Image (cartoon, rainbow, N blue to C red; front, top):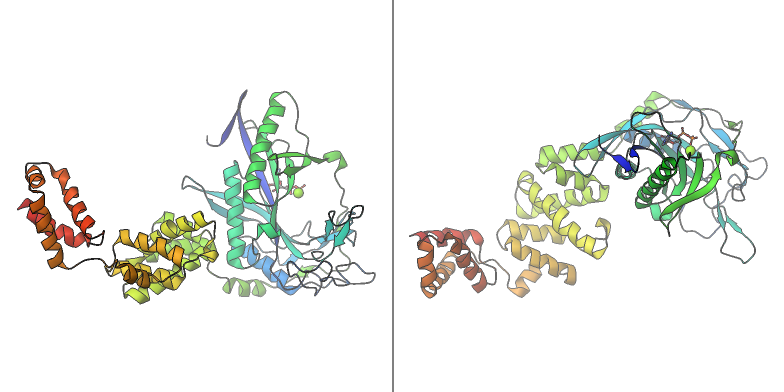
Length: 494
Ligand code: ADP
Ligand code: MG
C-alpha cells in the first residue's frame, strides 16, 4: 500500500482534511456596501454594519452568492437552493458584533469531488464536504503602539468561502496538490484571486494517524496556514510528532495548534477543554437564502472553460502531450499565455495550429518556464512579450534560424528586450541554407581532413559527427542542419 509512514513500531496511515478559507472577489462586503479593496488606510472601508452599530441590519450581497455558486459548480458540487445563515458567537477585540455570520447546518454548497494530479503522473479523487459563506473579522494590530492594540475593521464583513474537504488525503503531497487544485479552480472561475501573501487564501490543516485498517485517529487542527509549502510542512511535522507520541504509549489530544515558520513545527494553541462553544443559531436578521434552479443554470451556462476541460482540449485538438497540457493548465495565466502565443505564431508563420502545438508547448514549458524560474518571475511578469515570442518561434519554423540559434537569441532577448528579428540581423545569425555555399565548404573540409575521410570509409562511422561539427564551426552554428546532412552524407559515402 502506498503512502504509509514507517514508525519505529510499524506502519502508520496518515489522514488529512483541509478547511480552506478563500476570500470572495466582489466589490463590496457580504452584508454591506463597504469596499473590499486591499491595502487601503485602516478603517476607511467600514460601514455601520461592519462596525456593528446598534440597529443596523445586514443585507445579503447577491454577487457574493453568485461567486459561491460559481465556485461550487467549478468543484462539481451539489448546489443547495436553500441555505441558512447562523450566528457563530465568540468574543474578540476585532469582532465588533460579538459573533460572526456564517453557515452551519445548511451551507450553500454541498458535496462534490475534485481530481488532483500527483507527481508520479497518477490522479486522485478528493471529496469536498461543503462550501459555506461567512464574514471575515477585522484585524488587531499589536505593533503600532507600545502599550495598546489597534483595530483595523477594513476586513470586517468581507465575504469568505470556507471549503471543507473530506478526510481523504493520505500524504503531504496529496494535500499540497489538492490545495493547488482548489486555488487553480477559484482563479479559473474568477471567484477568488488566490493571492496567499495578501491573505486571500489560507487553510486549517487537520491531521491524524492510525494503524492501517483501524478507525480514524484523533486529529489536531493547525489554524491559518497561508502557503501551500507551509501546509505540507505542518503535515510532515504533525505526522512525526503524533507517531512519536503514540509509539511512546501516549495519546493525541484533539486540539488546535499554531504553525511556527521559524522552526517549521506546530505548538498547542488551545485544547479541546478550552474549545469554544459557539452557540450557533440562525441569524434572526436574515431570512434563509433561497434561489431557483434557473439562477444556478444561468450561472452554469456562463462558466468559463476550467482546467480539466482545457487540458482535454489541448490534448485532443492541439495534439500536445498530456504532461505539457497538465503543466500549462495548472495556472490560468500560463494556459492563456500559451493559447495567445500559439495563435500569434500561427498568424505570423502561416502554419496550422496542429503543426505548431507541440513546438509552442515545448517552448513555453521548457525554455520560457526555465528562464522565468531563474529570474524568480511568474508568467504574468514575463519579460518576453507574446509578439516577440511568436516572432522567435516563427523565425525557427521558417528555417531562418536553427533551434540552437533560437536558444541563443532567446537569451539575448531576455537581456536586451530587443525583438528577435533585430537581434538576428544585428548579429548576423541567419541560418545558412544556401546549398552552393555549404557544398563548397564541405568539399574544402573533406580535402583538409583526407585522413579522417579514409577512417570513416574504413568503418569508423562515429566520425560523421566530426564533419558536421566542422561545418557548424565554420558557419558559427548557422548552417541549416538538414541541408548539411543532405550534402554531406552522399559525399562521404560516395
Ligand atoms: P469541525 O467542524 O469540528 O472542525 P469537521 O468534522 O467539519 O469538524 O472536520 C473538519 C475537517 O477535519 C474536515 O476537513 C475533515 O475532513 C477533517 N477531519 C475530520 N476528522 C479527521 C481525522 N480523524 N483526521 C484528519 N482529518 C479529519
Ligand atoms: Mg474546523
